[in-house]
Figure 1 (cartoon, one colour):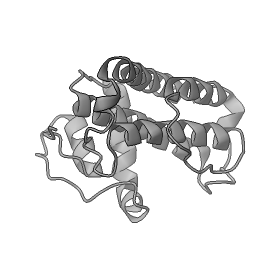
Figure 2 (cartoon, rainbow, N blue to C red):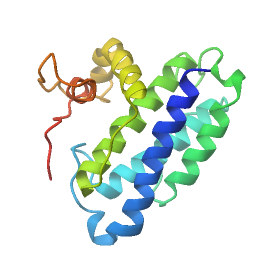
Figure 3 (spheres, rainbow, N blue to C red):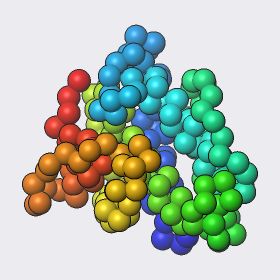
Length: 184
């Protein structure tokens, strides 16, 4: 927990700030724009982030895996509640009854979502995005171990080839099925 919480907080706050910027400046007409995450437009991606925050808040409290609701436009507030739950040391212990995985694994899944979906959103709307290098390294290491399971569960797409000497973030994106060169 001691090393993960700062990474989770920085990645989540960065993505929440980006969502605020998009909602404030992009306007309703940009919510239908495509994203590198093929199944989501901008609105769908923000809605997915809302669900991710709500779900990880619930499982952090020992609750159920929740279903995704309609777009609410409140990701930053949900994300803050999620971080508050995960800041309690006891949350990190054991296995989630709802997800059947160790809580530390779930924390890494949340980190990957925040880092990668922040990039997805930034690319879709043309906003700058530079994820925390330590968060990227942690996400890349975790994803390298979990990629096949992630593909089987539909969380990751087929890998996109990137050079072995590509920057870590590009390797992370390629590993989960994103093209680092994606443009709208």
